[in-house]
Image (cartoon, rainbow, N blue to C red; front, side):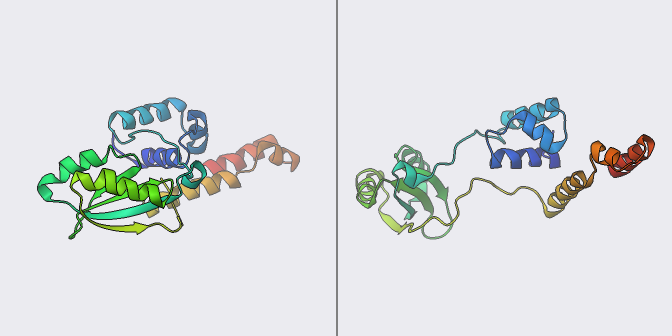
Length: 192
């Protein structure tokens, strides 16, 4: 099974709301629940969906200081240091980057003093000495959703959604004085 438009749409919905039910996905996509379940299971088995998580408002849980750290690590030690860095409480994301500073990571702490202690007592001993630390003053946009739909795929989804909104409900057709045969003809025309 390939990652087609249907799979991409399922992924978009799951990213927007990891707690969305199969029933709600089928309603949104106008597909059978068995199809949605099968596709989600496939994407989980293939490692496309790695897990489900909650997005947390860090300041609301007491994490009031965050930073992006750019570091220079010896290439021969990169994997070892990365694996140790994963275990440091507060380090949330780690990247291998290009340039003189070949590693960057995102770290969060309760306050500036704790951030400083983590860097001094946990990160520097790993062999990470050359660091540029940028304190995040304010989070403007933090999202977990990755746009995987092409422009054409997005337009096709919007066209289907708009078409559904334009279809008159049977009760509307009945109240308009149309005969059953005419109403069915109108509804059939919208589904073509």
